[in-house]
Length: 451
Image (cartoon, one colour):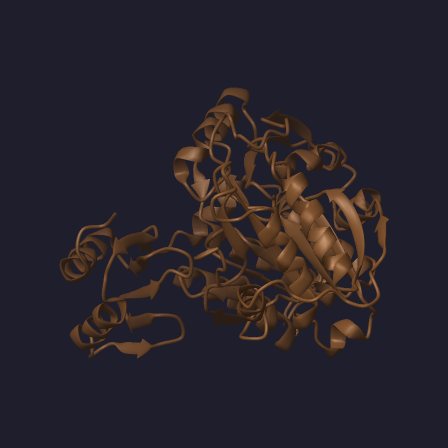
């Protein structure tokens, strides 16, 4: 059980680290994190799962624990994580749990949790409380056992997502290559086919062994087949989903990957064209071009720390319209303030139809700076290294929103500890490639060799 309780979810290797007994205990403990807002809606919990071979048995064990704790369960079966979020809001449930290990390899599994209205489970009264309860032993069953029902929400979910399409009657038919990576994005095929596009599907067969490539679009090597197919078919763009389909990545018509921070800016601009003056969130690893573009589009940019619980909470607090993270999570006010990879696809299509330009043409004005990818360093003394960087660059404007960020007029960097791995992660940006290379070499001399 050691190490499976993460900052945002529960995740580990099956069955060595996570198995049916542990997940049953998690089900028994889940009621302890429900708050007053949840309880006001009753005690129904939405449960769904991904396509991994062990997700079915784990979901059954989870449901058994929830029922034994006195909670009622609505089982919606195979679903993407955004479909789980939707179901929680649509069914006015007290919370939801998706059995999935997201983009991790096939031997992993886990759980993602939410409160009512798809609010994130976070803080000491969230996953740490579940962990403590499970560690104390088997939680006591309730005197009154809950009831189990089944529901089908796909049609309602599809109606909701497709309702945001704004395809003009005279719009050209865009050719789109979509890569489901044998993951839960496979479920989206009928909805993609109803978007008025010419769909070229890649790996739309559910297979939890991920036989073609890892279901993680954040790694550029996993976009290579997508990019090749875009070029070979003369497609207008390509889309890649991760394992549980809560993230999406995009490539343009030449197969060139588009940074998720740039996609955040573009979608933010599209939404602001219909609802101006709203807050748009971006994570602090994003290019300066993002906040500049949001301002130019009449919005209010909000810089936020990395992590879905922070993004979702701030989006609600600011009454924002949208937010995006470098990892490919896109959060929408109109999707319970939760991430929706498919709604991101819809808004990119809306953007292309409205402007009548290629994705590359729309992206080009946002390539204003030279920017690094996220670079990982294995560091024993994370706090010490961040303090060393803060001292080394003491003449810059520093903040500790997430790790250490230092800003100068012509460059900036952020170094933060990973929430899930034993790394420090570096992102930096400069006005020229030469300055970027110089500053990167300086920082690497302090942090060591990237891994």
